[in-house]
Length: 172
Image (cartoon, rainbow, N blue to C red; front, side, top):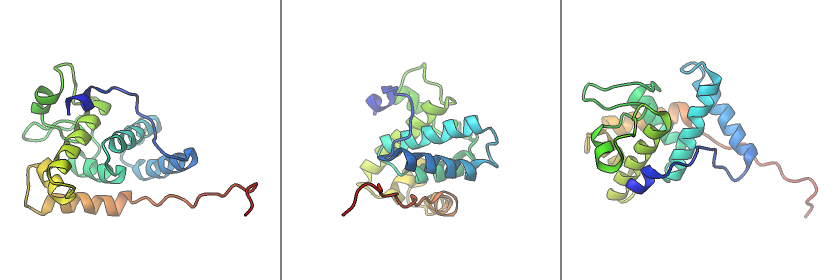
């Protein structure tokens, strides 16, 4: 986990087809516009979510649902128990797997921690996303939190890539 946190590559969209990546970014940006009016920040956030989720082997739409439930896309959110940022990461994780210089209110740092932690719990739960989400939220065995995340994902963040355009110069 510490190695994942220490890797500081700049976020970028990770798609096999750049046009598909741009279509994803445009559609997700449109959906997020009411919550985050600043287009530059919105696209930076979406790019970071896609990159960090993909890097951790997670579905970016799931991470969008989780961020919606955890913080409502508020970068400086603090929970009553002290969880911080977009993915509501508890500060003890910085001591456990990071360095004192890590700021959980930094967009990329928070997403990197949150996605790494969720991947860790998914590994512990042998791929059971429902149980991993419960661990992430500290509500293992209770259906409310995983159901909220899945519900947000389905209602707001489902993504079906547009049909790929075939190269007209290639003929069967």
